[in-house]
Length: 104
Image 1 (tube, rainbow, N blue to C red):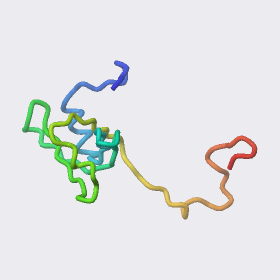
Image 2: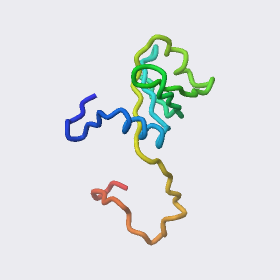
Image 3: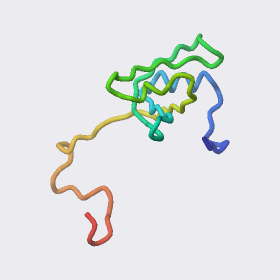
Image 4: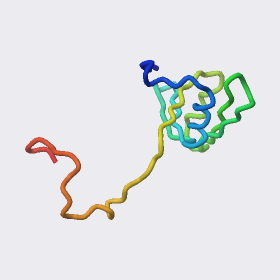
């Protein structure tokens, strides 16, 4: 994954803190039909492995788990997640984004 040096964080303790604080990650793997990406809750065991070990729960109904044995995967952790209900937006409020004419 490309990361410019001015955005890169190499301190393992900071990476671990970020995972602990925002443990819902995007698990990306290669399945029989191509790339799979699903949001999954993770737990970090800092003392297992050289950099720690991630544990995740994937629902049995989610077929992604069936192709993970021995596979390298990518997990993307982002900052805080939240949902803004449409009920919080006043009907008269202007849209947050302007669209070209004819596109709504």
